Image (cartoon, one colour):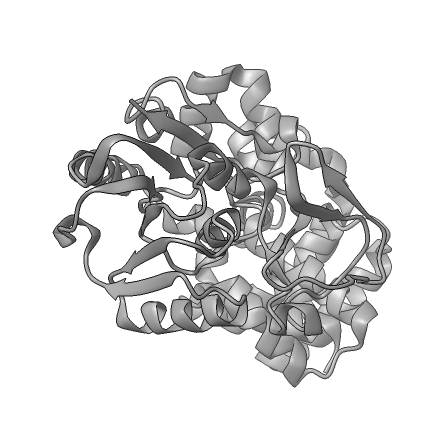
Length: 398
């Protein structure tokens, strides 16, 4: 199976089966038996197509008079992958993109689709990438209108434009080095550190973290520098009682345990039993012995007197769209407004669990005023286009 066929399967399953692109890609790439080079190409095409689907569908509808909704699902997915190559994938000749996509369409949708696929793709190829630049920002960058409007109100038109562009690019690849699993670490790729975050290592070359021996051994954990700021701001010390609400999947919990030198008591709350079990395995792999995983709803957890509390509640996730290709299409303004209310309730509950003179840190992986400053003022917002890391908001609660 080719890289384009693997990308097609990811795109089709994302939009026709409601699958999560970043979760199904590894299985599709493995099933296709792609080598490292083709795997990178397949990821680029799959993630890019999912991210840019609004622009791609607009191109099919306006340039080729073939609205995407009117096409059979298999042909639609194939044409989306082809259109992405023609409009956004530099380095792929238009002729090759058209020919390969026509062959893909024939294979997945039937030989009778060849003429239609060829006509649609050639119309899009004739317009080319310059056509994309004529579109208004939400269409040009392929975002829901409400997201673009929220960012324009928060950052200004130019800031929103830069942010949308940045989150269409592959995210920075960073890992957290785990001092609880000490030893030499040579990943075989160039890397650099961050003076503000001694545990952070930014990889400057391709590296499959998920398949690495280092991850399996608990020596590293994939985590953005923006995400690492929360534990650093919380600053737990050895011997303290620390609470991590909404703890799974465990990146911040492992960082907290390391900052505590694995001494004291770290309570990790997670409401979903499956995620709680996975969290226990993650912490065990990282050599954490001071942690206790509690399966409970954060709003129902009642133990108090904690020296430090990290609250990382559910959010709209608008700061991590680069690594979650389909997330922008799963979010709605109504859902974002609803989750902001949940965040405020969780914060008030967390305040009641804090010991006198304790410290509480609020952290969300989003870029949205109502969920950030609107919940806790005076925090720090990281921005992908400015800080080259995920968009996080972290704030200490007085």
